[in-house]
Length: 90
Image 1 (tube, rainbow, N blue to C red):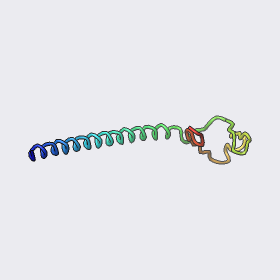
Image 2: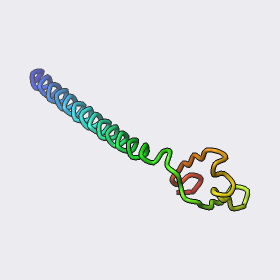
Image 3: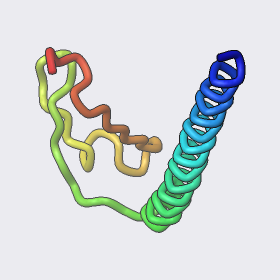
Image 4: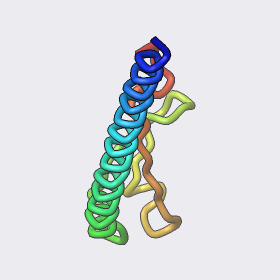
């Protein structure tokens, strides 16, 4: 009886070790894939940095249109960021 109990505990211990090994494998693989994607995105972004842009208009937070070409071009640097779904109920 005691022998059967030890065998079941060993099986359970082995199952937990396998599950832990699978989880570690998939976490490591995910981290590797995300870092590769991040490097590719950085390379793509570096191709765009320092390039001239077209003249465009954007709405400001003060309810007026801002014309980049007339108001900022050659006077200051422009940094554009994008926050998907920022300040939305999504």
